[in-house]
View (spheres, one colour):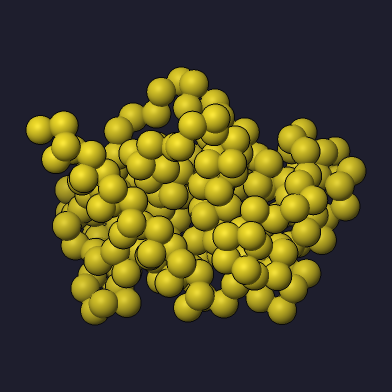
Length: 215
């Protein structure tokens, strides 16, 4: 079967369908993305809590860290990049860790890249600047280290020695102050979807407002 004829359909919560191999940026609803990310779990679905941690909650944590670390208000376009940095995982249905991506090879990376390109087109994401991407990677790694200890149950020394994450583990959960939730507790899928969708809609409106103001 040739690449042009290959298809891999998934049904979305809205009833629409998305071809994972040839993704159409106009197919899904924002609510589809929010719910699928809320149902996509990090850390292989493992958790030291009753519920696993979703990619939606992780994305909001990374965004919160970027905002917390910024000396000035984070531009909406940068915030949208943070929120959607793992968006393709919602369509793939799992969070693939980097070492496993290397084993799965180029075909997996190609599918993942095409999905992320569709997300970038749909939400008009701009490319990372080198400086912004470096700070993003630090926020992503700090979030991962903190999740590993507080949400999954990895000992801190194994986060460093086994997982190879050298960034510090946070004591304070930034999301607890924002949402009034129990620190580090994974959210139910409907809660994670609602909070992710609210952030997505707010940031899209802010980005469009900036574009109109500059026109």
